Figure 1 (cartoon, rainbow, N blue to C red):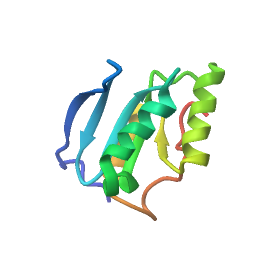
Figure 2: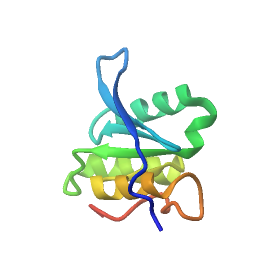
Figure 3: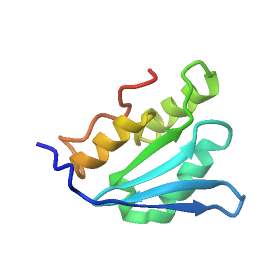
Length: 115
């Protein structure tokens, strides 16, 4: 059963490029990145900075539009090549954070929503 009373902290992170992303802290971390151009670099840079914590980090693609080829390609790359747990809708992100760290409870690399 998921404990919906768990508290999380969210804060914006500004990269040197000027791009801004939201990060959610709990037992897990969530890196929120724009789904468009520059996504893979921004996510990899953020995950590199997290070090060992990157293994339990959820990547959320904000403003994801399945009709956009670049958004689909970025999602696929992050999930399949980088092995990131990736969400594209807020409900799936909330569920992934609420479930807590690590397998087997965590959804697979690409979560439902916008598929």
